[in-house]
Image (tube, rainbow, N blue to C red; front, side, top):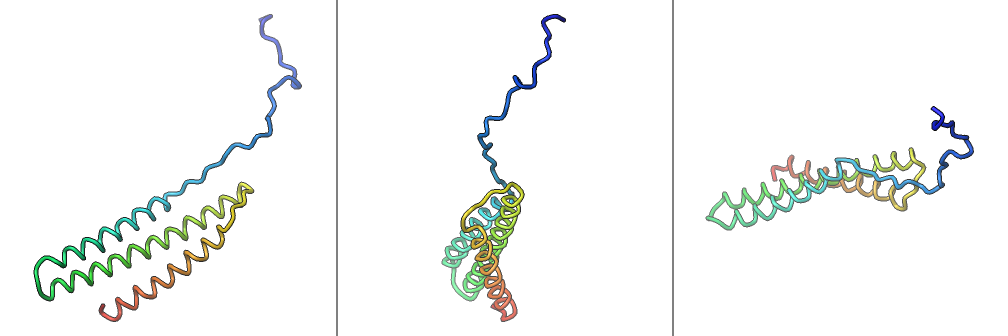
Amino acid sequence: MESMEEQDPSEAPTASGTPIPLTFAHPSDQYRKIAVLAALVVSIGSFFGSMIGEGEANYDLLGLGAFGCCFFINTAFIFEAVYNYKRLQYNELHGLKEKNLKLNYVAAVILAIFGLAILFGNLLDGY
């Protein structure tokens, strides 16, 4: 018991004042990357798939490929907007500042709205 001494509060380890790096991770970032890859696979796959054979089915396959590519790109824009919004919230919570984050968020929302207008226009037009 003699070896156990109470530590004086002035001798207690103090924080050195160096900031601990905070990292931000949200699953929408990975979903966005997967959506872009899916758009590429669908567009390239439908292009090469339409080269096999002849007739109206090839044009239908190209149309479906364009529709699928547009869908996945719009999904990626929406995920980008969600990611930027969550990152804005994270930065405000932790008092961090990042340049151009609000501009990225606004651009992603505008591109998503524009892409959805094209997508729904093609759906209603019968593509």
